[in-house]
Length: 594
Image (tube, rainbow, N blue to C red):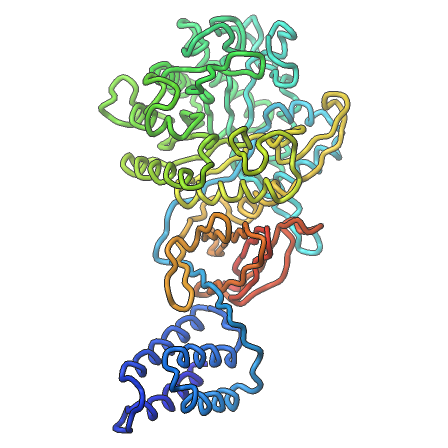
C-alpha cells in the first residue's frame, strides 16, 4: 500500500515542479500529497482497514481533483492508469465518506467495575418457580457462556443487587404496602434470626454466584419494622426524617452486620457492598402504599453509617458501605426539591469541612457516590450538562460515580413514558443512550438497571406473564435486556474506558462520538488486553464507519442487537476496520488476535 502512494506521489511531484520540473500547480500540492500518504499509511499501520488499495487510490484521486480542477485533464488520467496497473480492476466508488472512529489509546479514563440489576419484588417469587425456569432466567441475566454458534447465552451481569428486607411481608395487610412489594426479614420479633427467609432471593444469589457474577450488593429500602418509629416499613404519616427510632441506630447497624455474616455462614455468599439507605432525598418522603422506603437527612445518614462502620469492625465484616443512593443527580450537586438537610450530598459526606457529616475517613465507606439517574435523561442537552457538572465536582473530591438504579419514568416522553412493557428496540435504544451519557460524561464506574424482572411496566429487563400474582408464569426476554448486554457481556470488571476521536475527510468532528439521534460510540480495554467498542445507531438509516484496529489486534468480532428476529447479541461477522451500523441497532466490536 505504501508503495502505491509513493508511486503516486513521485509521479505527481514531477508534474508539480519538484526536482526542477516546470509546475502548472500550486507549490503546496506536494505537501498535501505527502500528508495524504502519511495519514493513509498511518491508518493502514493502525488497522484502519481501507477496503483495498484501488479504492484508497481512487479516493485520493477524487480528493486531489476536487482540490485543483486542472488535475482532471492532466495528472488524473496518468494517476488513474498507475492505480489500475498497480492494483488491478477498480471497484465502484461511493461519494459518501465513512466516518472514522479512532480510539485514543493514550487517553484512558475511568475504570469500569460492573454492570448490574436488582432482585427487588421479583426473585422472592421467581426463586420459588421450577428449577428449569429459574435457570433460564439466571442464564439470561448472568451467563458469560456462548452457544455452539458463538451467540452469548446471557448478558453477563457483573453485579447483583440483593434487597435486604424489612419485614413488611410478615405484617400482611397491616403493613399498609401492596402485597407484591412487601419483603421478608431475617430478624424475628424476639431478636433471633430465621435464615430460611427470603428463600427465593437467596436462590438467585446462589444462581448468580454459580454463573460467576463477581460482585454482590445488599440494599435496604427501610430499616426492620421492629426498629421503625411508626412500626411500618413505609413512611406513611411522617415527614422527611428517617423512620428509625433514636435508640435503634446501633441495633439497625448490628442487624446489617449480622445479615452479612449470616449469608456467608449459611449460604456461602459474601456480600461485597452494603447500601443502607435508598433514595433518602426523595421529595415524596415514601408515603403511601407503593413500597418499602424511608427518607433521611444527611445528618441521620452520617450517624447511621458511623454506627454500621463500628458494627462491621466489631464483627470483622469487610463489606464496603455505599452511600447515598440519591434519587436525583441534582441532589448530589445542590438542593433539588428536598430541602437543605437532604441536598449537597457530595460536599456534605466527603468535604472535610463538613465536620458533622463527613464520612471520608470512616472505615469501610467507599470513595464513591451512588445515585439514580431518574428524571435527568431528558432533554438530551441537560442530560449531558448535569453529568459533566457532576464529573467535575467528583474529580475535585477524588470520588467515583456509580449509577445504581434507573428505569423508565413519567418524564421519559420520547418513548411513551413508563407504562406498558416494551420488548422492542425503542426502549432499548433510549436506555443505551443513557448508558452512553453516564459512562462518557458522568464517568460512571458502575451502571445498574432497576429490576431484573417486571410486569407490564418499563422497569424490568425481563417481562413476566402471570395470572396468579407470579406464583406461576412465563418469562420473556427483551431487546432492552440484550442491549444492556452489548455493554455488560463484553466490558468486564477492571476494564478502562478510553476517549475516541471521530473524523471525516481528515477533519475532526466535534463531539462526533455522541450524536444523540445518530451514532454514539465509546471504547474500553479489558484487563486481559481485549478492546471493546459499543456503537449505537439511534437513527433510521444505516451508518458506514471505519474503526481502526488498536495496535496488536488482528480483527474485530461484531455482535449486534436489533429488532431483527434473533439479533440478540448475535455474532454478525468480523471486520478489519470497516463496518455498517444497521438502523436502530447496537453493535459491540470485540478485538481478537492480540
